[in-house]
Image (cartoon, rainbow, N blue to C red; front, side):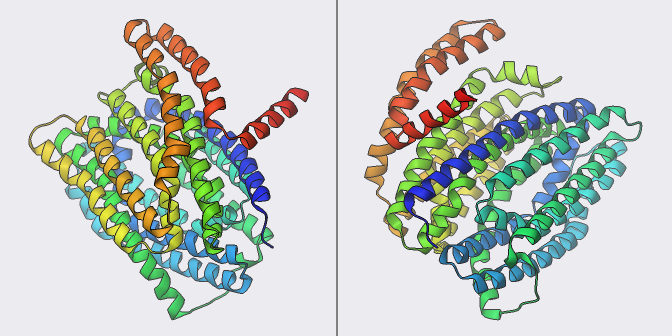
Length: 510
């Protein structure tokens, strides 16, 4: 049965609250976990773990392609209400993901192992531990691939409460692993990789168990349909291209840092990645509340509702992300020194530029990208977007050859992402008749005014206060005093204001 727009809006609001709660907890726990891991492993071993994981991620473009196809086709079939097709889609997805895990295992044990031992700059005395960690990283990657169809099912059915609880449990388990490092007498790098593998194994078992108990279509039955397979492979082929470019931009650049600047630069990049992953997890959780409705509304050909979803997501994501990104960016040096026992060189600037990039990217294009995926017409968009993303690797390589600093990396990222945002907006105007002028009027102008009201004074205070503790509290306090009222008055629609008032009344009554 198709729900009314008001029911869908209430579900999105409820799911957003669940995922917001999940995001805050996992963000705090995740950042503290990273602090403990860095402190226990040391800068050198932390850099090694980061670069070893990067070797596996080099092959994960295959996984990313399969994941995109699974999300799109499963949610599309669910939106159309075709239960028989849904069962076939899920069973075929299990087969495809199993084959994907096997491919990554083979690539990892051949090309990846060769690359690890011959091309990376790793201290000779740590090569044994590095190879040990590498094996468990491969196993963890394969488990992650096999659990993906079950996570897709939970997300597509919009069971965000379970999704939230599972995410919190995962974060707590990883924190426990980090704390356990302080009590072991064996090689901490090896111990860490084994325990993390255990966490992935336990969480995979939970997702599988929950889906079997709640969703009939997730009971695997052997199914083979060549037409369906090639349809998904065709879709995956283009997302594979996108994945290859993304890996080149992220882990390829990480390898360049290792070659040109050594494992200390990898440690700084690892901190940037940890911070960006934490914020990305927050943004992804927020997007998870909207994504199923994006694909389902396109499946029903309800394009007007799809446009409204994009407007709402852009406003809400900017407001929620700005709430903690702006104070953190202004006081990044203080935050990292509070968080970490040893801050690697370049980490502060890396993190500042990357978070600004993140705020812009999710506000201006986050749900637009999902809308393109929903249409299934991704060929030309993927080609152009992949070329732009690959430029990260190419430009960074050129600058490094010319002797530029590692700070080049996040600067190049933000420049390339601005070009990608322009490209995405051009495509959605064609594919879903997206009204860019209306988007500017209803969203961007309002957000710009909020920024003008709330950003300049905290920046001025930061520039004139020398004490880092005083600066943190002064800039954060002034920012919130200016941002919260303007966000409420200009950033929320009337129905959203009513919903917020009702939630606050319920909380105050408890």
